[in-house]
Length: 220
Image (cartoon, rainbow, N blue to C red):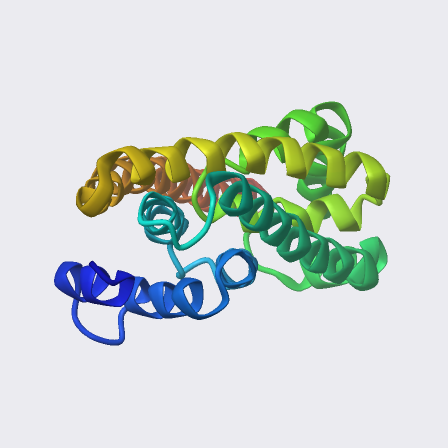
C-alpha cells in the first residue's frame, strides 16, 4: 500500500498525514527529517502522526528503521536549535522589557523562572522533548538563558531519539494501523495541555486577586 493512500484513508486529503507521507515517499529519510524539523517550528504539525507514519514507511521498505531514526532525530535537533537561536538573539534584556509591559505579571516572576531554569534546565530540555508543544517552547528559554549549545544539542538529541524511537517503532510494528498511535498519544497530549491551561488559569486568578487585595489596602 502506498503511504499517501494509507494516509488519505486516515484523514481528509491535504491533512498532515498526507503531507508527511508525500515527503517521505518522495525524499525518504530526509523527507521525514524535514517534516519533524517543521513540526518543531510549527507545533500544530503533530509528531504523533509524522513519526508513526515514518515507522509504517520503514515497514513497507521505503526506508530503513535506522534511516528513519537518524533523520527524524536530526530534524528534531535542527528545529530545536533554530528556536534556541531565536531565544538567544532575543536576549534577556528584551525579554525583561517585554515582560514588564505585560499585565498580571511581575519582573520578579520572570527572575524566579530564570532561577528555576538554572536549577532544572537540563531535565526540562531532555524531558520536554516528550511533551507536545512544550518540546518547541522549551528551546526558547534555553537560548535566552544561554545554556551551552553543546549541552542543549546533546540533551535535545537524547530526548528526541528516545521519543522518536517509541513512536517510529510503534508505527513499524502496527503497520497499516499506525494511526492507532495518534489516538493514544493524542489523549496524553490533551491531558498535558489541560493541566497547563489549568495551571495558567490558576496563576492568572491568583495574580488578579492579589492585585485586588493590594489596591483595597491602599484605598482603605
